Length: 84
Image 1: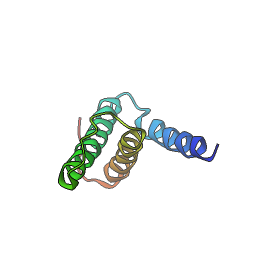
Image 2 (image 1 turned 30 degrees about the vertical axis):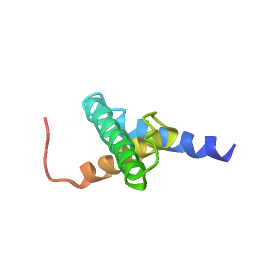
Image 3 (image 1 turned 90 degrees about the horizontal axis):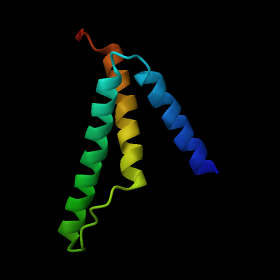
């Protein structure tokens, strides 16, 4: 139950930052960047330990993707760059 609550909160903040139509494409890219980066990092760590690589997308990859969206949203709020 607690895990579902945390995931729901993360999802809410993600939707809050990504609700605008002009930023929805950035949100998707930020999610993909975070999730794929986490997956690749996990695979590299497994390879360096000598264990077999797990190529499956995991829940932790999705959480990192959502976390990346939130952080990028915060950075964009304080960024001076105006993207059109």
